[in-house]
View (tube, rainbow, N blue to C red):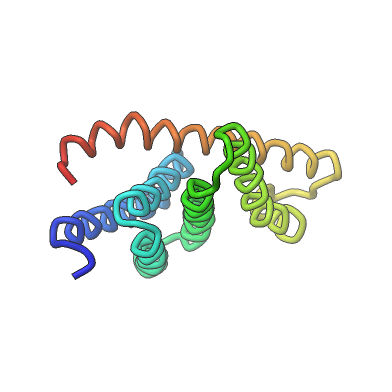
Length: 178
């Protein structure tokens, strides 16, 4: 068997926590993005703990269960985009770890990949579905502000994910003996 029982049960509980965070994001409106980010961090945990293939399967399962159980489907789409960003980031990090470059070049290529992956998802939403971001009419100045605000939000989200993986999940993982 590719996954032992301990890892399988861990991924099942992590999936339940992920879907619960997505549902709570729809119920507790005042901190929706925080809860959706926490749910997407669970996708990153699954990838790091079980590998890219099973992590991607976890990501697909979490999207399907979220769409089935969560009351607000728009938040499921937001969660799916955040999770897809982490899947692409973890895949890029994994592939770049085999390249024989120095760490400075590797970090720059990883950040370029992160910005490209984010903007491939963000710019079409900004141009074709601006009502998802702002209910009124958007002028060119507002579009530029939303574009640069999205880039800042990406950096903050990525820094929070990195901090979570290193400090918070690192401590919890040590106590779980995975």
